[in-house]
Image 1 (tube, rainbow, N blue to C red):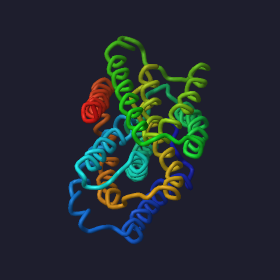
Image 2: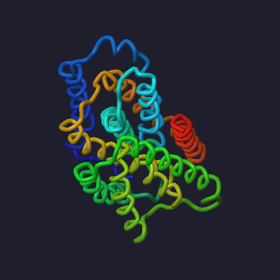
Image 3: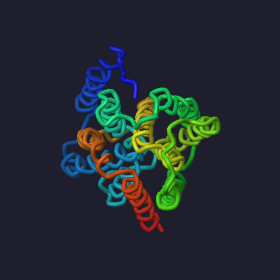
Length: 307
């Protein structure tokens, strides 16, 4: 795959992004008015951050599939009062850290040319996937945030069944689709239209649940039988850009419990850093199977919890 030779882009990835993440994290501790008592109660959240980010950045599945059930437990146990709007905001904030680091790792792998993108997949195809999805995703994300109001209870119901359906589809297609087929290496005309549509649907889902677009992108590319890195890396990058684009709305309109973000974000960055080699070690089929089981299992847990 063509290397990322532009000096500005390389400097931004290696210097700019870590600097911005560091400034953002410092701002949480300085301006977040953190409660020491609450920090002590949720001391284990760096571990949840690591787990969520490993799943998110190795599969393309948003970390919200881990974070949202965990945050619901906090609310149910009375540790901290959280409605679904706050849960989405916290999940987005943590993903900004974890998926940004994960995106850097995938892009650096591509740039290095070591274990590079599979033969026949061009840089143009890779970045066109990202652009096509974002063209639909970002306007849909912002429009949903500004125009759609849904009760916290209804949002949780939608999230549970959206995630369950997604997990089951991924599991079924993993073991029934593409067996014995050659890998796809280029986009066809109908792929481009579908990716824009996926962006629209994923933007709405991410605005409502903090997850959605990465899962849908990875699922579609898996079904179309693109190589592993071409499925996961764009999903991670698109998810990172989407949550970053969606976070200003919550900064302006949502009271965020920054204690949760302060503890989970470092774990998410660690998970984002180590996720890529885990994905490559597992391979496409077992990676998809693991992601599908986790998505379906966490959804079933929430369904049983609130039944």
